[in-house]
Image (cartoon, rainbow, N blue to C red):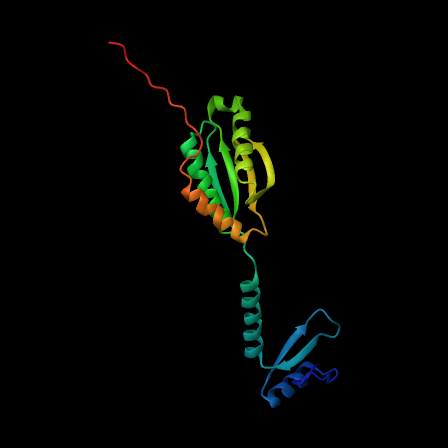
Length: 183
């Protein structure tokens, strides 16, 4: 048994230990039940529980939570949709979240997985200054996945990249074809 001030009191029976704790105005708490004989301590149990909850709250507060966002693409994504989704990915990365990029295949699109891989490789090249690929593209069933994480040392770079992405309105050329109906 351990006393209130932390000193070793020796081995006592349960009844005498409870009497000693009651006389001192504290509780008898078993702190090591697996020991032979079990170790008990005279303490204020309410204060002990409070300290445990405070330690748990502090550990939870200091815990770093990594959030994973997901962005879904289709193999036939258009340039405007691609740029919009890329801006969303940049915003997620700037916030410190990891991004899981998914290419969803339907029907006959499954015969052309290289289309999805090309989109993921293009996205990787577009984001190479602000992100790193943690999991390379992998085909699982009808979906192809890739995990992107923000670079560790680019706190200011991420903010400027997301601002540049917001200002970007599709710098790539889009060739349109006009169809003239003959009368």
